[in-house]
Length: 171
Image 1: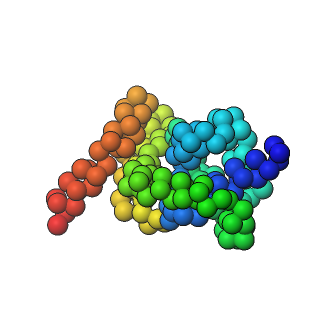
Image 2 (image 1 turned 90 degrees about the vertical axis):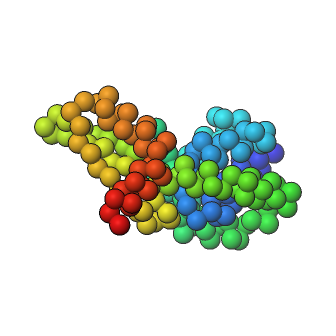
Image 3 (image 1 turned 90 degrees about the horizontal axis):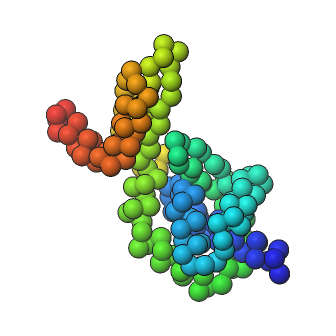
């Protein structure tokens, strides 16, 4: 029975990723699985790591944020096996994705990270993506790590306003 449950969790994750045209974060998928009480946190993490190890999904890390996308093998697998997920579970997933689409997309498409440069300063890399297209990308060099952390945090909160301001000044 445990093997069947793990297979179901894998298919559910693949199904979720197949229904959106942007990456989903670990947090976004685990929120659904845990709120609906399908599994516990540790089993979810084991399941998603197994999907990455088996090359069904691709993992991309950003600062405190891990995003997942289907690979070709993942697309092929869920296309063949999605009927192994009950229609009621598929409906719950669909409803969750529809109800949260804007927030899910906004969270996934807005990224920020920083790194220490060879001269000891910190370079921030802030992006808003739609699908595979960068809508805006902003890199800033600052002297202190604390400043880089603050820029990354505020980018997530204010990227839309920053984008609008830059566009208005350039047009």
